[in-house]
Image 1: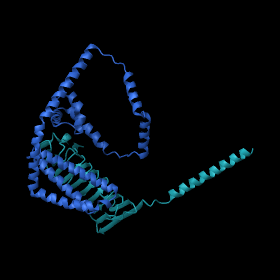
Image 2: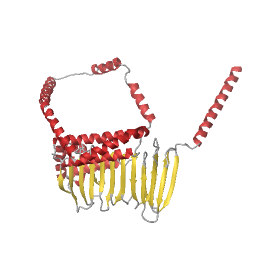
Image 3: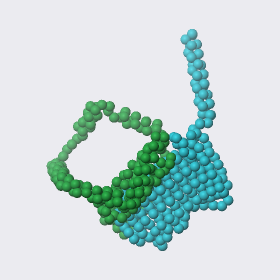
Image 4: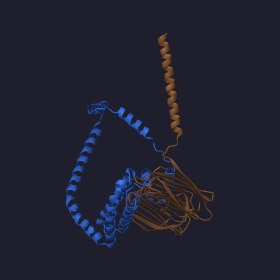
Length: 226
Length: 248
């Protein structure tokens, strides 16, 4: 990787949004390039200090004003919207040279070819999904037989019953917060299970699965005592 | 002529009505709102203070100051009552559970060496300049630890990001965990620690520390290693969010 390539993806790197392969490449480059390291450190500082800035929440008035202005700018009916779009399109002056036409035709052929390949690949993957189900089942059986997970499941079941009885008295804000937390936890549990079914020896995933279970118990205990 | 007189009369009437409306508004504003009952306390501290705050819904802001006293100011709704328990330098404030729960926002000033234990269900938590042990447990909170030179810290939130800017001054452990949010830590380049990071999202960015970390394990979902001489254990755990560690 050279400095130009590094500059193109460094902000994604700082955001932690790079694929593992690209991350390794940029880290290798950063280890050897002082100038890019300085750019990275500057970006990190900016991100870091921006998080210390006070949080300003726009008032509901402002939002409603923005919404009103957007609505005012948009044509009201479907027909008016379509007409505006068509007028926009006709208003443009399209002029293509022969090489440009050739490039467009080539692009269309490539897109069609990729579509066919992807479609074929997806069709051939059907039996693989069918094979994945027994692995999930195996994992479920394994987890069901693990005493620590059995204990978690039992505690969760009891706590859920207690929470269900009290839920109506909490008020909307707290109820929403509870639902949000439970959704986060269940999502994490599902992600862990899926990753484990693909790689049952992933120790980090097992540990995170236990963490997510503990967290679910903690949240349910907190809300059950409310 | 008569019409002119009528117009003048009408204008006078309108002016009077406007004046009365203005007076009514001023009178309404002068009455304290029943939704903003205030809880104000100052506790004098002789030795090392231990403060526990158990809130339900609302922000908790704790700031270190130079006085040997803890000052608590809370804005609470009429339905929310705060129970206080004081035993020497140990102070405990608990928002009583009510149906539906009332909202309470705490603004607290403490001596820097105060040990803090903050529990919350919902609401931002901010700790500034504190030098004592910190434990924060919440379900739905953004947690900010700023200018923190803390001997040990344990932050656990289900939903919300954790932001730590400070130094590791004790034996630890330093544990920051969130299920749905980022863990963002900023430390001086000279700080020694033993790092353990785990992110289900595989988004771990160790910034400038990556090159100076002697890696014991480097996998997409977990990186662990020793920085400089090692020392306290720094454990960062995120599920859907990112782990960001950078040098100050």
